[in-house]
Length: 367
Image 1 (cartoon, rainbow, N blue to C red):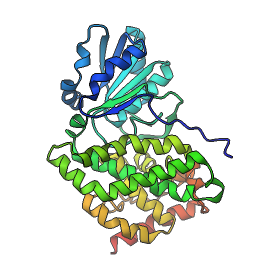
Image 2: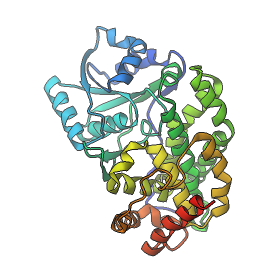
Image 3: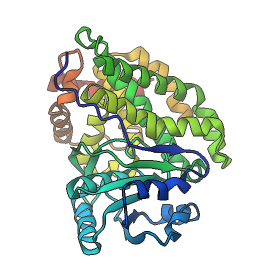
Image 4: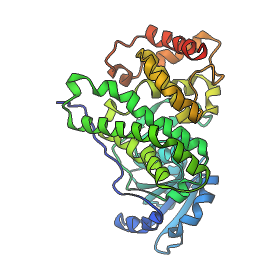
C-alpha cells in the first residue's frame, strides 16, 4: 500500500454546459461571499462579459484586477494587495491556464476561497491544485507550487470556450494526450497495479488518449466553424477536466514525467521556446520521452496525428535546437533533477537523457 499518495480529485462544484455560468451566484451564496475579486485577462475578458450576468447582482461587491499575462510570484503579490485592500473573501479567475494557475496559488497563500471560469481549453490548469510558476519575462521558474486547496467551483460555457484561438485548443489536445504517454509505463509496474486510485488514473488517461485520437479532427473542424458540437464539448471537457482528474487521482504517479519536465527545461533554458504554447512544447516532450524509452514504433504511430494537427516533432523543426551544447547539458540536468522522471521503470541517467535528444533529432529529421 502506498503511503505517499495524495488524492486531490478536483473542484468542489463543476458545471459545463450552455447557461452554466448562471449558477455562479448560487455557489457564491453557498460560500457566504460578499466582496469578490475578479482576476481577468484582456481579450478573453471582453469575450466573456456577455456571459457574466452575475456581475450585475447587487448582493455582491465586485472588484477587478487585470493580470500581467504570467503566473508569477509578482502576480500573486498583486492579488494579495487587492485582497487586503478591499477585504476580499472570494476570488474568481476568468481566463486561460496561466490565469487560473495564478488565482489558485494566490488563494492558497491568502487562505481565501476561489472559483474559475475558463475561457478556453488549452490544458487542465483550471482543474488542478497546482500552479506552474513563471517569471514576468515568460521564463519558467522551473518549478510548480502544489497546494491542498481545491477550487470552490469550475463553471463555464462551451459557447464561450469555442470562441477562442484554435491553436490553444490543439495545444490542449497535445497536453492531454501526454497524460497517457507519461503515466502508462509508471502505472504498469507490478507494485502499483493493485492501487485503486492509480487504476482509476490509468483508466482515465486511456479514455483521454482514445477520445483525442478518434475525435480531434471533427472537433477542430467544428471549432473552426464556431459551433460547439457534441465532439467539441466532449474533447474540451476532456482537456480541462478529465485530464485534471488523472493527476488528481494518481498524484505524482500519473501527473507528468519526462514530457512535462522537458517542457519546463525548454521554458527555462531556451528563451525562443516562449513563442510556443505549453501544449506544443509538451507535444515535443512526448516524442522525447518515447525516445528515452526507445519506443520508436509509438513515435511512428503518432506521426500522422502530429502532422494532422501540425504539432512539433523535434527541436530542429521548431527552430530552437541550441547550438551551444552547454544549453543541452543544462536542460538534461534539469530533467534529471525531477523526481517523477525517475518513477519510470528504466534507469534514467544524464547520459541517456542527453543522447536521446540527438537520437530523436536524427530519427525525425532524417526520415
